[in-house]
Image (cartoon, rainbow, N blue to C red; front, side):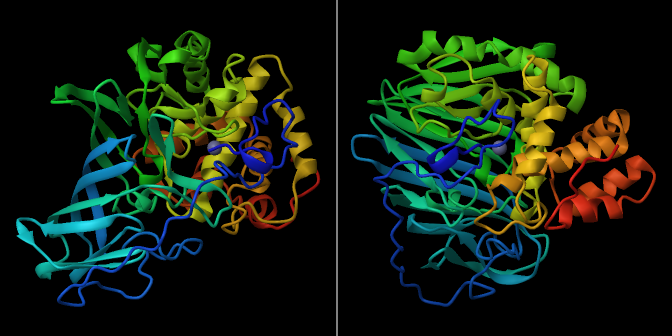
Length: 480
Ligand SMILES: [Zn+2]
């Protein structure tokens, strides 16, 4: 993700990393999601109360113990005229512990029914948990199909990380921004990056509108006065990387390196203006492949909506941008940042939110590399600027409020650059390629990265990482 200073994301680009990414206020008129009212049930059916989560120190309530989701089949019906969402999600999951009940993350959806396999079961809405009774004792390894029907008038929320996220209604449409903790404000799910799954998203919208989600368009047909758009993301994906756009969009197809399918989406009225930005994609992918290894997913594209300037997000296989950043032409820095995330964050995702530097520091570094390639400031120059701009605080241990702060972006790219200096180019890029190719489709920790770095280096790097990654104050000069 990229955010701008004081508001929305700064297209910080060529300022050599001196911008401080601050909190973002997307829509000043947004209203926090109201607490859901409890739905009575006949039994206390959840498990691990209270505050169920998977132990994420920054977001203790996110994720659900004992649950490993393998696939989401999401069916949404949305009409921008009413701003009401009617939905069903079919969740295929495996139990990882013996249990009588499970929880899902859900704060906002009004649950109408829950079915486990073929049996209607009792449930209780206990914001932000949806507590579901199982029809019988559940055992490790059991595969369950949980079907949740729900409705809501979706809205954005003010996240504790200092930005608005969730569901945004626009004039004639909508879009979502889920990172880090908002997917469950409109979709009951296991809302934590440690649990990746495949997704099918079918969206029913009034005829004439386009609905876009991640992955491949597998079906599009009329249904009475509506159109149904079905998208399939076959690569394991975390919930925060979900894309959903509804509006008057035009799909623009193309071909990237090695025949990679490209599908972009722009507002129909923007199509001519945005083509020059879409045209940047093949060269950027080819450039990053030289350093990061083969493009790690099945397709790519960009999707440009009418959100606030400076906001961009690495939604999987089709990055999300704001039209105001592109009406004057391509924003090279933003494009490069979100594309680099497809390797760093999307293919390989963070296991915990405190591992977010594995996303943002590497995407920022990719941004620097691309700008150097274009003849702007060199990576070395940007890194030296950014080193001067670091403030006290560990890149490896951000607070929730610092999650999208300087030390995760430019300040973290400083750590990446120091590692490159420490290892030399050959070992450094070997490490990045092995990281992505070896862990593609999984969620990993900072310790996984440092362990692989030591393996590639053939020596201990504990002093290096202690000084650069974990210490509150980094050294004042890069390794020679
Ligand atoms: Zn980012």
